[in-house]
Length: 191
Image 1 (cartoon, rainbow, N blue to C red):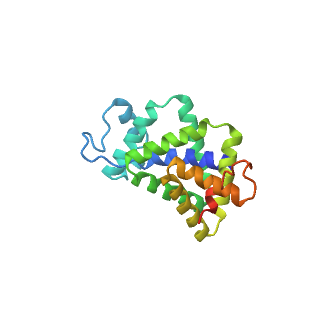
Image 2 (cartoon, rainbow, N blue to C red):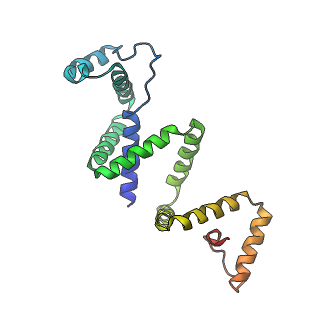
Image 3 (cartoon, helix red, strand yellow):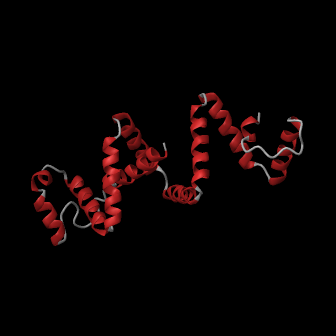
């Protein structure tokens, strides 16, 4: 499962590169501007001639990004793209839909998510596995129960530290053992 998630994330990076929004107002829109770009276009003349100006610009933007990548980054991008191509059609479609949702987010939210993903990647492997398992269990809940969990989580986020301590204390009392270690999923049970 972890491999699939990592590969899907890599595939999304490739898809992001392939689906970059067009900047029509940029100079040289859809036209090669360097000798290397002209050589690239000449090498793929048949395909190039079938592209719209917007598609040509996207190809050139991606080519420029590719040129700036290190050999290691290029290898990772190629492997990710191959993995994406091997996904079943429905998973590829899900990845593309996720990309569309990602691109529709404000840049500030995307940066927030990049930072959160960076923190996740820094966690010890066993902690990452634990988080993935919990997420999988959450995904398997019926929709109404998932919604209740999310509502409870939002309520928890809005509580003050004192309110949270009080909830923990009450939960421990309800379970009959005030010295019991804190449960990590207690907020699932809030009503």
